[in-house]
Image (cartoon, rainbow, N blue to C red):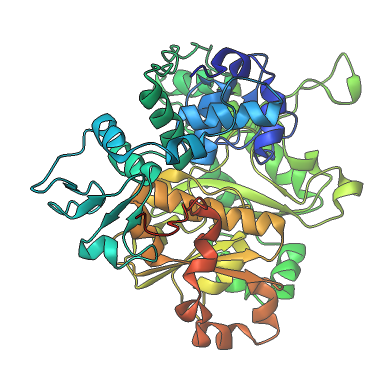
Length: 495
């Protein structure tokens, strides 16, 4: 069976990104969230996807990207993409009827099933039962306890057995079984191409330079000096009070603000004390003169260049200051600054309050929004909570930090399309990194019409935490879109 590997991989990656609905990166432009490392710098270029974040400039083909995003193998990803791209090829539809009509002994020979004592008895590849699988003309039935107790009452089709033997998906098992029964060799996937060696970016070069220079200051030193240099001003206090957050406690935690007048009096003098590569590594590169001027000072980049009053949010990972984030306290259009922004190409490599991941409490709350997570984890609730800077910002390595003693992982997301996709991203990441059963036993989802700050301000958050609706949540509905929908109808027992 010939698969259109070349045609699919030579299709425009930008079009494939739209088909896969890869979430767009907050960096803008063509950049997307990387399905491999969770970074924000995954770019569809002319002939491949390139990740300049955690993957370090690796190149991925269209098929590799689709297989990772859909959680399937390369062959099925190639078939599915070909259909979405309108690429015709032989055998585009799985030959279900052809495979179902094959004789059981022929299928047993192809799959290498082990014969047991008795003319029609075999060892079951699904449950491992010795002699538990009985063959009929074109069907199978297993009497083992694990198989006989399922909703199919132990009945199996040829594709079901092929899935168990080859550990693959229904579609791929059907194609492979049909090809083997016809005596047609399967086309193997093309050998993976070595990743394209890309030149390191400007920030990577700056980091390498300051690490090799004695006395140079790393980004964390800049972030610490920035927080020490600023204070929590009136606009920042008003923003926190409006969300029901006590400003004194937030200031002690590390929240600061950059308000009118402080751009020139506090921030510019601080930046003047740092070398160009130190600022670039911290995410505040020096820019050409503004407004298209050919001459003038090269100012270090800053969100809004002093036009926007900002709430400065510290992102801590234990004793390490992983970075800072900014919330625009003004009008984004008037200040020409987004509502939320991070340093350029220097997003924090940890969620807000990352140490809560490893705390080992019975319940871990993963909350959309740093301020929402601060409220859930603060007085008087004191829940174990980490905050995501955006619905789709979860990264796979964070799943490895959660200890097994944590029995429930509750995702707090907005009840909108982005929130639902963000919740699915965390769920799939947990299943991919820790195993499906581990994740299924722990993952719960909470979709809210009002965020945690609003519930706290209205006096309703304590009742929600006390009621703990995630304890009685329907798991089947959470995992419905992740289950294989294909199920073979056992039909009637053959005569």
